[in-house]
Length: 274
Ligand SMILES: C[S@@+](CC[C@H](N)C(=O)[O-])C[C@H]1O[C@@H](n2cnc3c(N)ncnc32)[C@H](O)[C@@H]1O
Ligand SMILES: [Zn+2]
Image 1 (cartoon, rainbow, N blue to C red):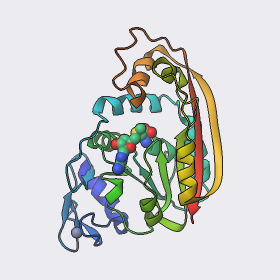
Image 2 (image 1 turned 45 degrees about the vertical axis):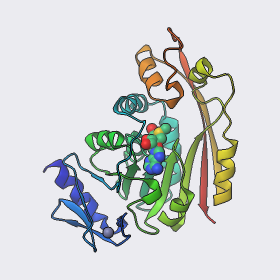
Image 3 (image 1 turned 180 degrees about the vertical axis):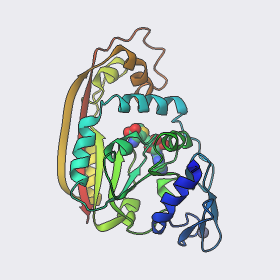
Image 4 (image 1 turned 90 degrees about the vertical axis):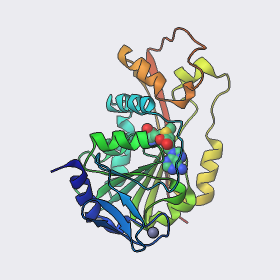
């Protein structure tokens, strides 16, 4: 079976999650080719197995190279403790519908759901290059190019919303989550990738504002801290430098970079709708 048809079938199984980003009508999968609303607004399923729901062109600073580097680093297992923690939290929900918002190239979602035998994973990102890569490697999941501010999903469709190192949209999170659903937001703490940060920045990073905004919008039910250091294999240095906006416009400042270990320092904020 072709990739496009396989994706179309998966989308059809979970058709009720879709809502037209133009007119908010319900949508259907038509002829395994397109996602079409009651008013006939039509979004084609690409041959690579994803749908672009953007209603206007968007330029993203996140490019193919950055997403390839993120995939290499995530596949190397650097975030495995994060994935198992999220898996543990999701594990309490029966057949969960999971939406990853700002999913990038999809590896976090794919790793988190890798042994899940029911439910569904859906990823949305505004950067087409990210979703192209996601659809290429992970064809059991549903991948959408879209703007979280105008998302193609219907009211209270998801049990779990993930928001990993990506911008939040609490109005949409509230609309999309079921009443008893959980939002899991992953934010960096001050030591996150500090070996890279220290090369280019003097000030330390604080996530205080981000945590305050989370608490203003959601009822915080749990917080987990994940802090660890991992020895860095030489082959991962370049992908590590390329995967993060921390190095944007900075790479010519340092000729030689020596990093032999890398710090992960994350906070998982788990919340319910207020
Ligand atoms: C730092 S990256 C993190 C990607 C992924 N979660 C990861 O950890 O590898 C932030 C992502 O948020 C996405 N993003 C930013 N604004 C968005 C929006 N309005 N709607 C959807 N995605 C958005 C970007 O395209 C980018 O892929
Ligand atoms: Zn429509």
